[in-house]
Length: 444
Image 1 (cartoon, helix red, strand yellow):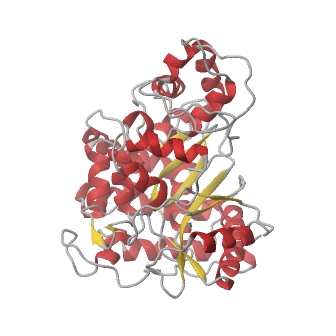
Image 2 (cartoon, helix red, strand yellow):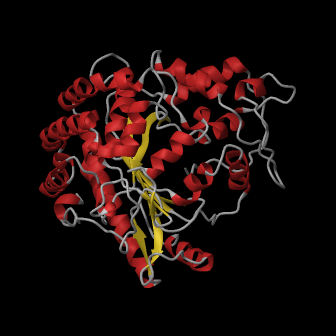
């Protein structure tokens, strides 16, 4: 959610509706051979001695002050509820990405440990209600805007965490690695990723009825802001229309609270007496939270934060294999194509396929079958991407523990229950370690 756009830029010349469309066309899908990938990992911060209790703001402030002195390769940002996010630099290989973020996380954990704090990988805080840590104009305005639709917005802002995988848009030409195929695949395979990596079945110590409560929040929110555009057209044109038709979350101001318009689309703003400028467009793009966000590259935002220190590596590796290896991408495309009928021509995540993925995880038979095929394709492809034995073993362990059995990490938190009865977690679930990804082979 954190985006590096200044709070209020000096006003420049206004942009017209046609200019907005041209700019979005040019900046949101940068095509070429898939060469780079990245990952953004979000974490909840907890007290080591009393992990169910929220960390007092003063302790969080001190912890972040210490973390900002670290020489990290990843960008460190803070989410509205105090969640920590590390965003990797673009990496030229899977192992470069894993090695860089692993080293940064080691440094972060060591610093937090000195303060008696640790990181938890849950898609949604299992115990505590939403409580905003950052009080800035952006988040004040965001909260006011989202509150109009219900409580889900605050929970998304303050209680959720994810693993976001960033991939190049792909070739201009058609084919398994073409940008049109990758755009479509991201939205259909996204439901399989939601189901396989669901890890947020609890809120305030009770089962919510969803394997991925985090995904249920996005489903309930404003579809113009948290939904995808239709997939039946050219991606650039569809996204440009989506950007123009999305409502304006806020109008920034040099001082004082920001204005939160009532029902004004960006298209309407360009036609108004006080139209936006390029900086306003750039900012507007950061306030759209679809499951797949085009930012020159594709940002896949649907995966819950994972258990264990290294659990984030499995969704990164599997997703990279299914998109950047041509053979695996073709298998994934053929595997998920039949699932598209369940979407019922509705945009993700508000269609039946994505809802079932969030509610049932891999207990859904068709999603389970698709996940089995996709994990098998990823396992075959990962050696071709240079994955080390540790990464291959981690993917195999996740497959054996969850995918092959029709389970997801959320089922560990539900314990012996059948997924419909409420239960309480018994302390922080760190899950399987998937191996400790240390050593020369992973950081070269």
